[in-house]
Image (cartoon, rainbow over all chains, first blue to last red):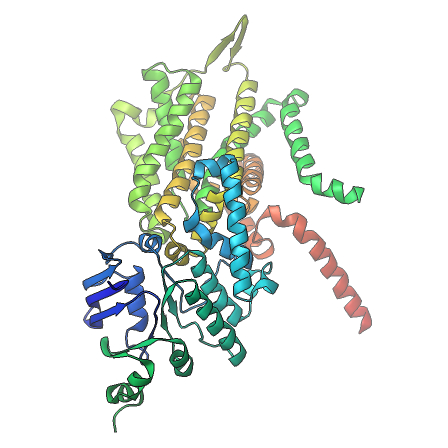
Amino acid sequence: MALLELKNVKKAFGSVLALDGIDLEVNKGEIVGIVGPNGSGKTTLLHVISGYYHPTGGQVIYKGENISGLRPDKIAARGIVRTFQQNIVYWDTVTLENVFRACYLSDKTNLWQSFWGTKPYVQEEMAKLAKAQDIVNTFGLSDYSLSLAQGLPHGKQRSLGMAMALAADPDLLLIDEPLAGMDAGEVEIVSKSIRKIVEKGVTIMLIEHNIKSVMSLCSRLIVLDFGHKIADGKPVEVMKRKEVIEAYLGVE
Amino acid sequence: MEFAKLKSKLPLLLLIAFIVIVIAFPLVNKDRFVLSILIEAGVMCLFALGFAAVFRSGQLSLGQAGFMAIGGYVAALMATKMGAPFWLALLGGGLGAAIMAFLVGIVVLRMGGLYFSIATLALGEIVTIIAKNWDTVTSGMTGIAVSAPVVNIGNIVINFATNKLPYYYIIVLLVILFALVFWRIEGSRLGRIVRSTAVSPVMSEHLGMHLMKYRVIMFTLAALAAGVSGAFYVYYLSWVGPPLFAGGQSTMVLIMCVIGGVWSAVSGPIIGALIVTYFGTLMQIHLEGLRPLVFGGVVILLIFVLPNGLVDLPAKVPLWIKGLFKNKSAVTKQ
């Protein structure tokens, strides 16, 4: 059974169909790349899966359950976590605490215990701190762990976004343009951290414009154009297809 | 080494000194006018603590006075219709307001942001209108007279009507209690979650936090504080009526929090409430009519000079002094 299955998913904004009947499957352990020209519906697709938008029609099925229309926090609790196209961080605090706060879903003790500072609560917080530190190190942010997240360089902020998503212990991680605006060195670091995430058994769906990186990272590519899926398959084969080239470069 | 040790203990020492002064003050200064200002300031402290808690969850409530009114009326009705004792009426007032906030919150906080502000503004007005017109229960503009409690401890009889001192100590106790609660929340997981949801609601939601749950918790706690303060205020004035909790109170509490500094959960609202109540009362006597203008001016000035409020003053002053010297040396160099 596929980990995630989309059946005829539609999303309309007024009379504009941003997603026009998308069918796709994501299996466990894959890195699926979503590519397509600007405005083809890639981010809308991510929004619909993560619960930010409610689909206008169709079904999003995750681990055999229909999750379409659920609240984002419910979907996150089931194991689908996402990053954002823009750099969103908790600007009021440092990098380490950003990741620490993102460990929210692993909290077992309740608010009452936390109010009185009971022993299980303190132990849990210490364990979370160790986990956060570990994740910060994985993403090469250890030099910045005590600097304000708001002041980090662009590339580091993007890494932080992924680090925070990972802190929520996802089974399926949706990454929106991880490499946008990065230099060659940063691309290398982030690609490495994405591979590390996969090694932990996390399935990944990512949107990216950097075709070279997508080809080397992904095990499968899905191409969108005007809200339709126009291709789905091995990266090398997909990029040779006529309709994909037309969508990207136009028709003569 | 010794100095560093002392410095790290400084906030605690200051706090202890502050509490000692607060307790000893009315025993030294017997001025009844000063005592009455302090009691009113205490009521406002309680009110402001709650308001700041909502504000820190990223929501601006413009109708907090409505919850103060609910607390006040519930307490007055419990006292007059059911003969409830003082402490029970305080508790009832607080719970009444909290229940109301919970019911309103689960509907209105779904939207949050501007919608929440508008809805709370309306709520505050609705409460006042009901108080004015529901004659059979609230007695309209006449209001309800509440007799001051008389407490017997053994042979000692404390009559709250003739002696205001007990009110002072009770409100001090209440402020300390609520300050401790909000301080502890700030330092624990709930505070961290609430800050997260305020700073970036979208990301917090996608990390699994149920925004509404935490907003409702803070809103309900804030209403509890407002309700208790309202109930206490009614007992202190021996009367409750619609003008007591008019919309202006909701604005005053915002001004207090801006002046004191809303980015600190406890000290900001308390400092703001003390200062605004004190100067507000002075202005009411000497500058009647100019009060709103002065407060408006002060708020605008503070937003430019001290956007984080007066609690930021100790951190800012050394910087200003440094800046002053830097400019001078630059001038002499030229």
